[in-house]
Amino acid sequence: MALAVRRDPGMGVAEYQVWVADRPDEERWELIDGEPVLMSPPSEQHQSIVMNLLRQLAPLARAKGGRAIPGIAVLSDAMDGFAPIPDVLVRCGSVLGHGYARDPILVAEVVSPSTVSRDRGPKAAFYRTIASLDAFLLVDQDAPCVEAWRRDAAGAWVQDVRGRDARIDLPELGGRLAVADIYDDIDF
Image (cartoon, rainbow, N blue to C red; front, side, top):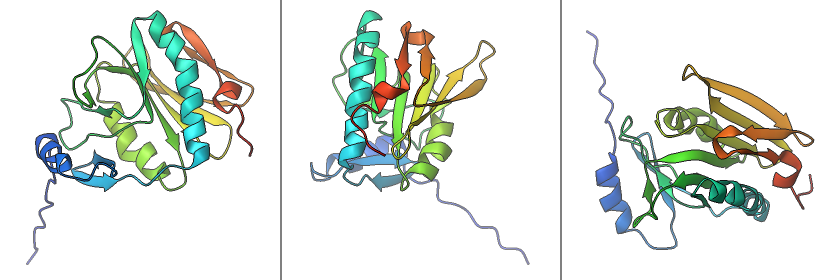
């Protein structure tokens, strides 16, 4: 006799928001595939790359009437069990009164060995469901390499991998990023 195994669907966003509100302020959690995931403190190298991304993306976002922001969770109507917190997101519109955005046009994740499978797996799949999102960047923490994922005219996601001497076109922001600037003051 076969035994059917039912997977618990895990938390939805509404339940997660109630749950996470009671967590200590020093803890940072994100919701990945219905499971709350505690985020470990980032390394200095990770945070330096985040700051470089913010410095490069902020003027491009501002020119489009938007902002480059760290630490805001992203929600999608298509997937209820997710509230990831990308390292940087770009969005336009009024300032949010809470820490959850449904309308980013670009997100960036700085990928470390401990997060690579989650960043390239369920989080990347989630980002592809966000209707407003035009691009997401996976920025390697340990080598000068950026994967730029962009939605093409047909709506399919296309990957473009760039090394240190390359530039990443960001037509959604009307500009380009120099990969070398993302890794400014980073030694490998």
